[in-house]
Each structure stands twice: as C-alpha cells, then as structure tokens.
Image (cartoon, rainbow, N blue to C red):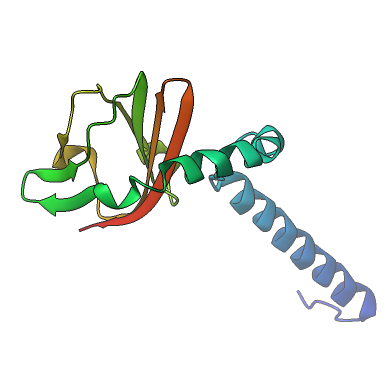
Length: 145
C-alpha cells in the first residue's frame, strides 16, 4: 500500500501532530501542583500596612532571635516575649505541604524542633506574637541541611 503524499495528507498529519502536542501540554499542566504563597492575596494586600507596623514593632527584638541547626534538629534561642499568643511558622516556598506551625508559650526562651519535621532546603521562619494588644512579626530565611 502506497500513501499518496499530496498537500491534503501532509496538512492532515500536521493538524493531528499539533492537536496531539496541545493535548499533551494540557495533560502535563493539569498534573502539576500549584503552590501559592498565599491563597487569598487580596485580603493580605489590604492588611499590608498592618504587617509593616508589626514588623516595625518587632524590630528591636529581631536580633535577639538566634536560629541554628544542630544534630537533633533546629534550635531557636529567643528573648522572653511576655506574649499573650505566639507562634512560629516554618514556611517552605517550594512545597506548601511541608509547612510547619508551632504555638509557643510566653515562658519559652529556647525551643528545639526535631529534625524529623524538616527536609533539606530553604525555609522562611515567620514569628508572630501579641503582647498587651500590640502585634509583632518578623521573618528570617533559613536553609536546613
């Protein structure tokens, strides 16, 4: 059987190949996970000035937080916060399923986070606390090896 390679056959093959390529791209793009930094950008954008005020409030204690990696995990030395509520958020930019949140008490000055909680890579440590109706916030990059 001999195929007649006229312009109609070539056009048909080109269209079939193009459609196969488009369908392949759609399948690949649907199977990719999309990791957003924030799921609700608009409300976070409106609260931006409040976040800047929290960062300014925490600026005097920023250097008192010492973060280091030891054999047992991650050690955080911090000042006494006298906080009503406080939490530490280990944000992993590459995979939101690996984010970790810890609530801390106001008496804690040294915290050890076990190495089973972490995988190798970059984390953004976000510390939030409220004391006497004043909100504080700071963040720092950390690379866990």
